[in-house]
Amino acid sequence: MLEYNSQQKQLVLPEYGRNVQQMVDHCLTIEDREERTRCAHTIVNIIGNLVPHLRDIDDFKHKLWDHLAIMSDFKLDIDYPCEIVRKESLDTKPERIPYSTSSIRYRHYGKFTEEMLSKAQSMPDGEERDALVDMIANYMKRSYLTWNKDNVDDEKIWQDVRDYTHGSIHINTPLVRAKDIREGLGNQPQQKQNNKKKKKK
Image (tube, rainbow, N blue to C red; front, side, top):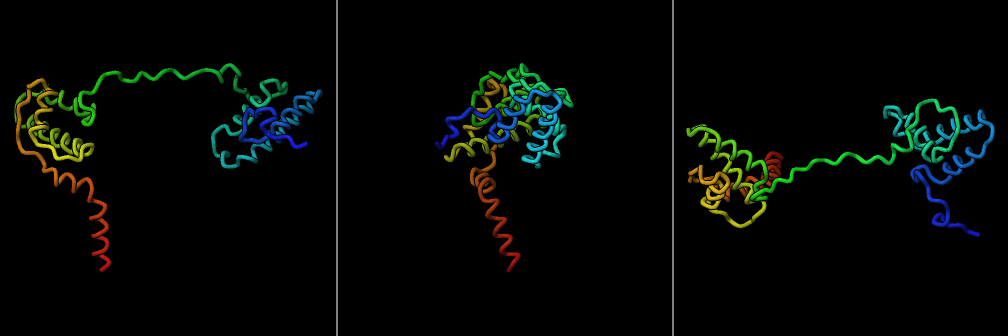
């Protein structure tokens, strides 16, 4: 009678297939330790041939012996040629990554904009500070148009700068035109293609 895979025991490492798992199960039943060890070496050689693209990885053989131990549920009593992974170490969870929980006032500008404006706010008045603020404001306008296809007035950008800096920065110089920004963002690939066509002619 036909037996479906869904009716059989679930594979521990499905990438090696059911035949390899059956070899491991058979190896567990061998009573002689030396013969059992020879059988294990044969299985490792077989599964190594199944994944030849991994041979360049450091400790390739070591990983295969680890996989053999895992497929046997760590019940295979043999003389392993290397120290295998411990069963309890497979259940360990990675440490939680401490993500920043600080809120971003205007997400379309990003956190980096807040940090740049904070840096500018701490600088003394002068041409250097004005040049940095102007650069940041133009960057903000580009970011705004990236996420919002509507036109944006320069006054809107400068108002956001004042909001970020609690009114400590008062500049209202003209910024890059929205038309020029859109051409720079969207038409570069097309311009390159047109240049290639001109060269061919």
